[in-house]
Amino acid sequence: MWKNTIKTLSLSCQLYRHQKNQLEISKRFLNLLEYQGKAILDKSGVAVQKFVVVDDASQILSKVSNFRVDEYVIKAQVHAGGRGKGHFDTGFKGGVHILKVSKKVPDIVAAMLGNKLITKQTPPGGVPVNSVMIAESVDIFEEKYLCFLLDRSSSGPICIASPAGGVDIEQVAESNPEKIKTVSIDVMEGLTLSSALEIARFLEFDPKSVDQAASEIAKLYDVFMKYDVTQLEINPFASTNRGVLCVDAKVQIDDNACFRQKAIFDDESTAESDPREVEAAKYNLNYIQMNGNIGCLVNGAGLAMATMDIIKLYGGEPANFLDVGGAVQENQVTEAFRIISSGILITLRYDW
Image 1 (cartoon, rainbow, N blue to C red):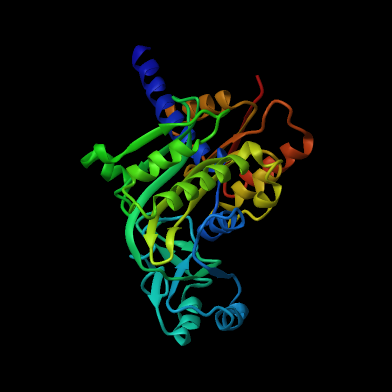
Image 2: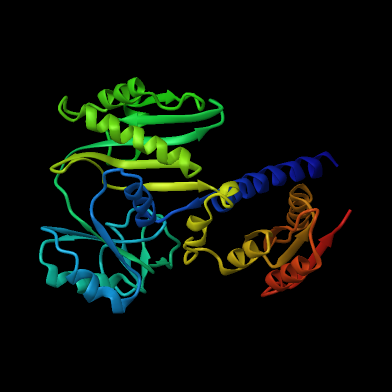
C-alpha cells in the first residue's frame, strides 16, 4: 500500500511540474516575435533600428527596394534562440545574416521564408518561418543586459541589469554575480529618474551616454506597465554608432490582459503552436498535448492531474491535459471531444 502511495505521489509531482511548466509557457503570457516587440517599442518612442517585415514571398522585392540602409541584418522570426547558428530543413545555413549588398537580400529572405529553421532550442524537425525581419545593421560598441519582469517574491516589478550583455544572463549570474543588479520598483511610485540613472551608471555606459540610457530605461518601464508585460528583456541594450539602442527585444504579455491588449493578441503568431492547442484556446479550453494514447477530458485542473496520475500508475500514457472548467457549456464539450479524439484510442471523463 505504502509503495503504491509513494509511487502515486512521485508521479503526481512529476506531472505537476510538467503541467505547471507547460501551462506557464502556453497560458500565462503571450510571447511576441522580435519584430512585434520592436514595433511596440518603436511606437512608444524607444530607440530601435529601422526595420521592415516580410511575411509573403510576393512582398520581398518591393520591401527591399523601399528599404535602403548601409548594411542589412536579416533575421528569421521564430520563438527560439540560437538562430544565427541554426540551419533550415532545406540545408540553408543560418537564421541571421548580415550583408551590405542589397541585391543579395531577396535571395536570403526567400531562402528563409516558408521553410523550417532548426536550432538548439527548437524541436528536431524545426519550426516554420512565416515572417522575416530586415533591419538596419548598427555598429555595436558595448552590449548591456536589461530586463523588467514581475517578481512574486517582491510582489511587484523589478529591473535586472548587467553590464555583461549579449550572452546568456544565467552564465553571468553564475560566474560573475557582482555584475547583476536587481532593483525593486514601487508599483505606485514607478521608476524614478534617480533609479533610472543608477541603473544606467551600473551598466557602465560612457558618461556622455548615461542620460540617454536612463531616458531609454524609463521609456521601457512605461512600455512594461502600459502593455501589461510580464517580461521585457533587451539583450543587447547597446551603445552603438547611433546612440543607445534596443538591438533585440523579448516581450511577453499577460494572458489575463487580453481584453485590454486586444489588438496585440489578435496579431498573435500561432505557427509554432500545436494546432489542437490553438483550436482549444478559441473555446476557452485549457489543453496541452502530450505523447500518450489515452485522452483526458475533465472538470477541474486538480482532477485532471489526478486522472493522469492514475493512468500513469497503471502503465498508461496520457495523450493530453484538458481542463474544461466548472462552467463549461455544451458546445465547449463538443469541441473538446472533437479535438482530443483525433488519434486517441480511449477517452475518459470524470465528473465527480
